[in-house]
Image 1 (cartoon, each protein chain N blue to C red):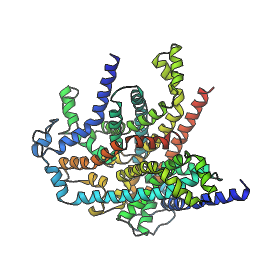
Image 2 (cartoon, chains in turn orange, purple):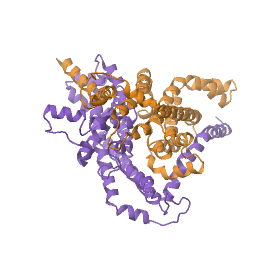
Image 3 (tube, each protein chain N blue to C red):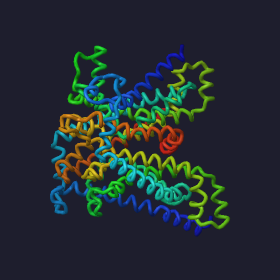
Image 4 (tube, each protein chain N blue to C red):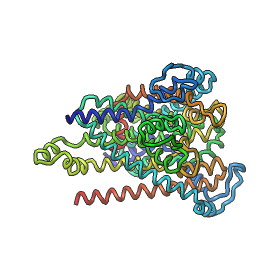
Length: 271
Length: 297
């Protein structure tokens, strides 16, 4: 009896969580007048919306843009923060606590607070309306966050490893690249994945620092999909686009479920 | 370790930190300083480079603007209500996931999905479900007899804000649930077992044992969520545009900056947002410590 109640609660929660996705998939497979009925299962499923989405070529370009930006941001953040995490996690030096607090503070910063300064910087570097400009601006939120998580992971590695390396005359650089980084590979993968997702999902900077359709990332493209007129939004295509960008994320999340949870909680609970 | 060796270690530390610190100085410290400065000038998007110092004029303009105060109120209401709901619901879900129940793995995976997708996508999913003529929410509510005829949810100020909160709860409760679950799993089973043997019921165990033990971790999670909610932009922008009825401080500041080209006043609004965020964070940290001190006598 008690279990029946729990099961019922579980079912309600699953329904509440997953229904919007189900509805997006159902809508994306409807076309014409069927789009406006509320049948939970499309009566005559059609791929027309997906075909239309990719026919114009712009959405494919947006996906490529997002992948390039998120990939570059994740790689660069990992490289810079792995080095910093060694210093923050393994060496006791003066000012470390203050530095960690500052880094955490930056990661919680409202993005709007740097918007005009960042706009100026990107224009001064000649990066307005380029993917490099968008990627550069993303470092403000990925760097603090990857540094923070990698520092907590770095701290947990056994002390003896480092001492043995120093005994053998290894320089700090060799210790980090040959001993710590291989051990941290799973943590790096998780952290990189979280940075990738954060960059893939970002909207405000991408909206502000790009101008032309060719430079749009996926969130901006989805927010700005428009129909023949302003009053006639192509909901079928918007839902198809939503499904297309959600699927890879769902697969990633399912594949790395445990790791993601470990990374998220390492950054928050133990900190 | 000798003093010389220690100095060498410290020098190594700064060497390893340098690339990251340089990057942060470029993309965080410099833009922040410039934005703060621009808030005291008459800069506009139309004449970049030509700006004069105008003192507090932008702040005077901002504080005389009812739309700004509306944005402050919208943001505070949104952040307080959504974070409160997410904390309570997240804790409930975490307790459910903590129970030894088959199928909880499926639920945990399912819950990560709303968290992982772009906010813009979740906003579009809900915008379509809430569509005034063809939305499934209207169809369901009419069928259940809750409302007589379809409503334009996102065009009514209060309803729009309520739905924006609901969408945020849908999207962010998983985050709170996962952090709560991690904290719950650190509570030693022996303590709960002892309390149960002493005759404390499940509710008593939760309020007297579990909650005090997970409070520090929960507080950190609440602080994270709160800071995230105070800077909300995507949800309002996609669901309701930049209209003053639902605009958050971020939406309002961006509108001033980009749509109206008022870089000076927009930068002042952005800086004011930072002050509000810092004030809220300090308040929560202070309240949290006060309560913690009380719990520990």
